[in-house]
Structure formats: structure tokens, C-alpha cells
Length: 274
Image 1 (cartoon, helix red, strand yellow):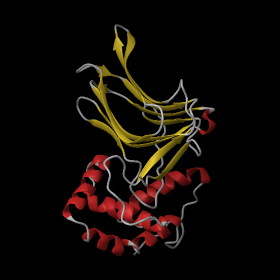
Image 2: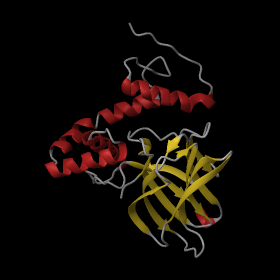
Image 3: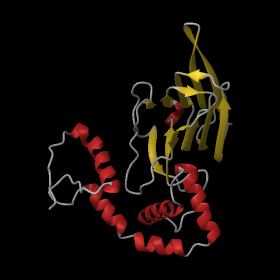
Image 4: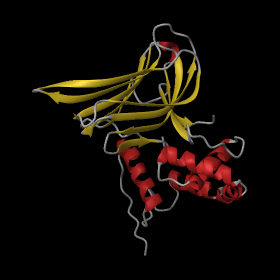
């Protein structure tokens, strides 16, 4: 017998509960719903997506071996242990729902969704920062980006600055790495860089994506961070065609922070068509 529980959820906890519900709907046996029946928005979207599965599966079977291999490589690049079939189906359903051409094209630069950074009018300093802790050098950063320049700037550009902090004789010092994108429009490109000496222990690391006093749109995808021992962070900006990306915000020197605020028009989670 199914036991139904109807919690009274305050509005400020809606996003957290929605994230929990999606996890159980995806991996768990119990059925979660916010009403007495399966009529929540998340469930309705899932049912709508399920009706498109037969056409997506048929389109997958029609692909040749090389194309299926390309989807598998694209899935691994973004999510590591993720099947090419699942990525193709999610992409196919989204494109079908959005009225785009079918099927999509696999890409090692981006898959499905990404994060768009924008600084309309170039009036602000738009910043996206990721913090982590307890790492061992060297540190490797890898990400894909595309840039559309609205208004040229001679003094500012899209930049990625990395800082890793370590202790020295009762104080602390830092190792840094800085990347500046070239002027003008830039098509999808993958950047991979390493810095810091071997076996140096870092107590804090931050990577900062900035658009300072520069009117441009920058798309970010496939952020991968490694230290000497492991891959400690990978972000593909979500895989489900019905669910938005919800960032884990900075807490105790870990996760994301956004300035001026994680909201449009500065930060937009969106489908990356090309």
C-alpha cells in the first residue's frame, strides 16, 4: 500500500524540496509528490518527456556506429560515467520540445545545457567563483567557452583567474594562473592549464570567471578541476531536459558564488544549440 504524506512546505524551501523530489524520482523506489495525486509540475514534465521516448529511441537506432561513438565521447567528456544513448535521448527530447531541428549534433565542447554569463552595457563586474579546499599540487583546470562580443573593449576582456593558497612559516602564500580570452568573437574552444609545484598542499583554491567593464556574452560548459590525486570537481550544467540547474552556494570555502547575483540577465542556464 502506498503511503502518502502531504508536507506544508514554506515557499523559501521550495527549491530544496524540488531537488530532493527529483533525486527520489530518478533513483528511488518511493513515489514523492507535493499533492495527493501525481500532478506536481515535475511529474507532469516527466510524463510529457516519456511520451517522446519512442521517437528518440527510434532516432538513436537509425544512427551509424561512428555517430553513436561521438555521442558516447561527448557524454564522457561532460559527465564521465554517462551513456551516449542517455545524452542523445535527453538532447533529442529537448530539441523536439523546443521546435529545433532533429537530431542534434554531438560535441566535445558542450552538451545540452551550459551557463551564459553576460554584462549588458559593460556597466558591471560580473563574476562567477568556485571554491574548493584541501588539495595537492599541481592543479589542472579545464573548461569550454564561447564568446560573443557586443561592444569591443581595449582594456578589459573575459578572464579566468585561479588562486591556490598554502601555508609558509606561520603565514600563507599563493600560486596563481591567469587566462585572458582574445578580443572579438570566439567560437567554442577548450582551455586546459596546470599550475603549482608537485606535492604542494593547498588549503584553499578558487577559480573566478569574470567579465569586467566589458559588454559581451560568454558561454561556459564542461568545467573539470583536478589535483595530483583526483578529479575533485566536474560540472556539465545539468543533463535532464525538464530540470533547471540549481547551484550549490558557497559554504565553508566550497561551492559557487555569483556577483552581482545568480539571476538573469547576468547568469542564464540555457540549452547550447551550437
